[in-house]
Length: 381
Image 1: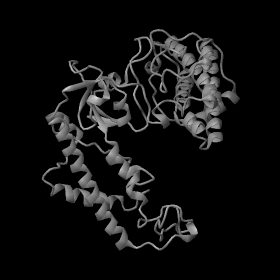
Image 2: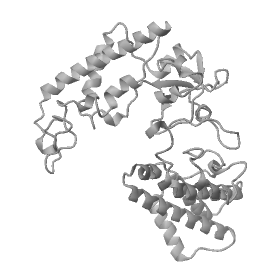
Image 3: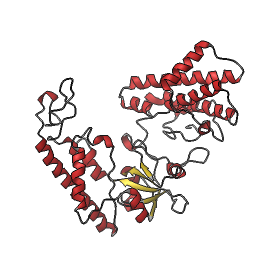
């Protein structure tokens, strides 16, 4: 089993007290492979000049491990034809215009016409024109696959694989003709003597990697690094989040192995829930891109306030106090609004060395975080 992780990049291993590499975490979860972006391979070691996205690799020298993880590389040249806004198939003038809808019914009767054409000037949709382009684009894509694999053979003398991974919402939602294109492409490939359809698992089973790479820390965001999430407008979020994580970890250690009464269990459950909602990468991403940034700030502030309330209530109740009726009603409202992650396991918050309460103070001076997803217990220095 394996996975494609579109929202993520790669985390490299830091000293044990700080963070495990992402491939190690995937191996621990029983996964055998993952798909990564080509630019992650470009920054890998050994030199990318000796690497090819058509090859399969072991990650971080773990080929001798009892649980190695393989890397499939998402091929840029082929996926760009389908995914890119400029020059990709879905932007063809004959295809259905996504953004123009008819009245309250929401039906679409217009074609793209031209990406620069105003919605009012879009021309009527012609299904026969769209179908002709579907066939032409499927033929073009199949030819690209053959050329890509033939080129790899000429350069290396080895068979290779082209991995084209996409969000499923592209096909039929954003790109109305997408399912037709897939159907036509599959028909053409099945009659091709040079290209064979396969799955990642089948390819891994029959052609295991012979090379090893060490990936650099990266993301799928703009620039391939953390700049979208980590910038001046988001540093206070990280400051508050790191403090909340430290408080939750210390609370989890305090309660580890103890039998909790129903009220304490409810409070701690909601405390952990609010922390997980705080940790959503959506909030800094929305702020970093300027897309509904105000909403992201409000949501983060709400969950941070709720977390602090739950943490304070837990501390008081564990000290022998009882919650006031107003506080119980507030807890009930939190559970109603955000009552997810039921039966949360406190063990997920336990670490060997919990961070000190003041550990996050120097974080705001850091140029970037150690990790977008915090996996261990160190703050940026």
